[in-house]
Image (cartoon, rainbow, N blue to C red):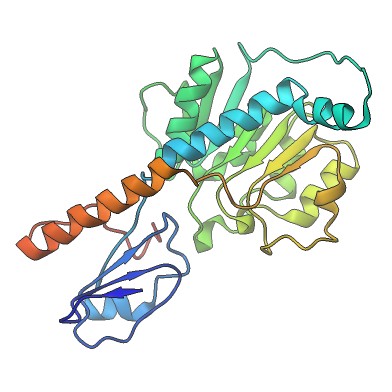
Length: 273
């Protein structure tokens, strides 16, 4: 936490403060579900976040996951370690569909990279509207419809009470048996028990998971040992450039705050993002 000398603002990552003169809180993360407190609205405290700073890094991580599973890279790595010469039938991505649950900055950036490979892109928004480069936009409650059309289903929505277990049994049942689930949002957005059942029963091809209900992921968790699950340690946002953008955004807001100007990335406390 960083506090100003006159207690006017605080920089937080998953914590709260009781400074009596607090007027502004800035989260170093994009997600703010651990930062929002009821007293913020009651006291008129402004909350800003770092949304957008990490979008490119996360979008590239999503693209890396798509390419890895389409080109069987995890299998090749395992075979190299064991000295096994084995070929695979692979997937071409042109014409395949990336479905995005949550077309915020992360989801839109991932869709933009997917389109460079010739993929069709669809997704959900809380308030659906046409978006440049997105072939179809649906309402948030139509997640199962998006899942049914997707070869890769990306979870990129913010964590709010409305998005808990967004990917539930119904959404997983709607997915094609050849489809992959990718989650870079929060573990709470996916029903992990339902996902394990779907993977065990062969109802979807696999999952690329960067976030989990419990972190660090316990060493005895089945995900570690499943050949069709790619596990990364909540690491998709990390890059030198993303931290530089987050710092620049914060410093710009400090200047705006000092000058009495509107701040960037103000969070809607009721919506949760």
